[in-house]
Length: 208
Image (cartoon, rainbow, N blue to C red):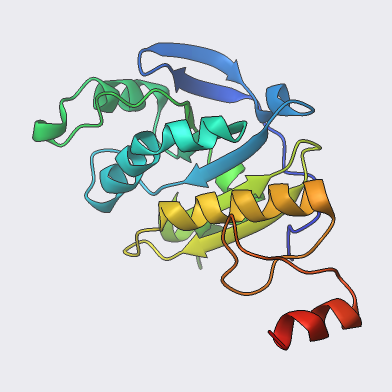
């Protein structure tokens, strides 16, 4: 079932903020009416592809903030593991210097509700509860508007790192549509021409 146009699943969970402080009641609801949100899932702390993505978001955090966008990460690790990784220097495989929030989804309910859990619970022949698949999150990236609605998302398989510039492009697209009421054609980027959502507008755009 697609989440596009629906309310982003709400949650209250522990998180590490500012790279050093654990809070027990973090929620995306704090941004409703105030900011757009890029909420992304990654599989696991202290791994290989994940730190490249997390640090890439940090390197471009100012570009998101200039657009009034909050960046929030999430995995199924504990908040204590997040804090340990945030306290580990980059040359030792850590993500020291990351300042945006990292949410701890230990119960895996957030990943499940967003449709990114890389497996599912079931029962074996003996009636025992088992997990089929990998109990971590796929690389899901969700763009949530100020009303708390999911307007865009993309989910990558575990070995496939995401493109942070594409996340910024989608923010620009959404904010342009919200401001101007036009639509953004294929490969649209900030500064390029958009078009009215009419047959005449499409025809004029394609004829150029």
